[in-house]
Image (cartoon, rainbow, N blue to C red; front, side, top):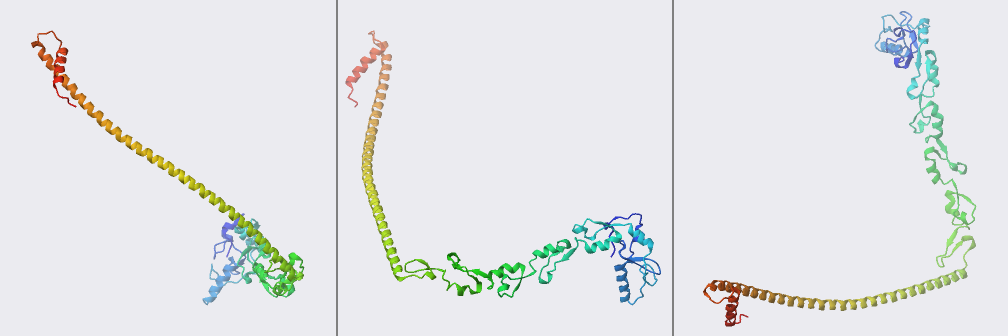
Length: 352
């Protein structure tokens, strides 16, 4: 395959037609020239073409003519001059390389370019990372798939573990030295993890707890029976003292509850008295309300009677006005009415 025109920054004075491979139609790369027709092709292109011809049992003919292809020992000097005028981007431009190179320097640069991609050297151990060549050393230093010896190797561990698994391995490896639990009380022994279960049950610096007197002591110091009994007596005395204190507190609490109960009862009696008084006042208010209703009814009746008397007076006054022309005495209608009304009142039975 040739070089894409997009990778060529400058063609100089070179005609594109003269430096183009007729097979891939790209700029010639590592050209080979036919001795017969002097047409040039990319090495990969002509090699693939000839293999296809051979597979079909054909002669090795040129792609552009029927002549038999024979490689010319030397590339034409004109083609070399034309290609040397090109300025080409590195094929690793897509990965960050910014080099612009003469055509003849491109092959050598691409062999050492730090932006070409490479598989991690630890791919056999499972790493699938594709890393730039310039970063391969940095990646290798941190790659979790490189094999690493356990720290317990010097004490007998023969495991070789992947770097990503080393912490989990060493956390369980029996050949890692570890300090005894008695370190806090003076033990300076570093013991293999696999031997801790044997060492600690015998270590004189391990702290023990007496189940009888609840006293902590070092295994090397022992625990005397007499001292244990004394501690038990002290513990019992402390418990009794705490129990007495609790009893006093409970008594005080009971007394407080009794006093509160008494106060509640007093308040209850007072409340009952207040309720009785309120009920009595309510009964009185109800009785007063009944009396007021009776008084209102009486007033209504008296008002009705007064209205009747008023109408009666009006009627007799009208009669007096009608009689005045027939009465020769010089009386006013009011006097006539009063005289007549007074006589009638005297003669009428008591309406009440």
